[in-house]
Amino acid sequence: MLEQRFLLFAGPKEYRTLERIAAQLNNGLDSVMGYGGFFGYFSRLLLLSMNGLNALGLSYGLAIIAITVIIKLLFWPLTAASTRSMKRMQKLQPQMKAIQEKFKDDPAKMNKKMMEFMKENKVSPLGGCLPLLLQIPVFIGFFQMVQSAIELRGASFLWAYDLSRPDTIFTIPGIDFNVNPLPLLMGGTMLWQASLTPPSPGMDPAQQKIMKYFPLIFLFMLYNYSAGLTLYWTVQNLLSIAQMKLTRTADDTAPATAAPAASLAPKKKK
Image (cartoon, rainbow, N blue to C red; front, top):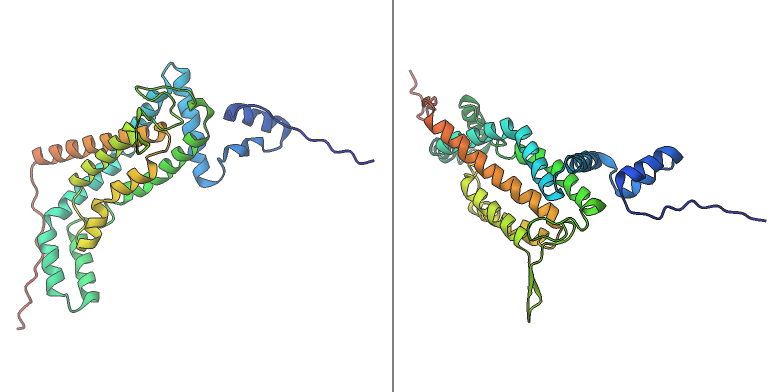
């Protein structure tokens, strides 16, 4: 006689409940949340933070905004340094273009001279990308968390009646197009932020066009995703814009320091 036993769980995917049952039965039940791997660490941390802020009396929409502000404050020094580096690089573009023109027939020497020039003036071509790269794990972790968090289902904020679904306010008849304000705000703030960010030196026109319309790609990708995710990204963009303006204002009011000039003229032989 063959006898088989199965243990079933019938209930919501609430992480704290699943984690408690998994610890009691040692069966890894909490893995159904999809919080494994490197990005899963951020998902768990963000979910616990969101639930903790909600327990303090904040709605889930305000909790998402509070988490976004906390993340921005943690990255503030790095982003501020990046903004200053990009601004210095923008001022040095005439000299950098002169180096590119002078050594255009010798790419290896041109790259060497460019690196020497940037090192001398304390700028880095990766300065603008580093803060974004460091925030990608947080964004992916937030994306995973929002997709699986049962807490956001039915949680309303402003016009969004459910933060786990798109914030559709009406559908255009005839074409069945859903109007979702938060993704549109997200795309608008990304375009605004892109307009304030100077292009990297040496970037060809084709790459500049791609970067110019990159926010539209994000808008298309995230248009029908949950309102909680687009709320996070919109607030993140607004805080980044405010930081860029504050950093530039502080730098403009600070005493100017002259950058060392690079000598591009060939040395005379004795």
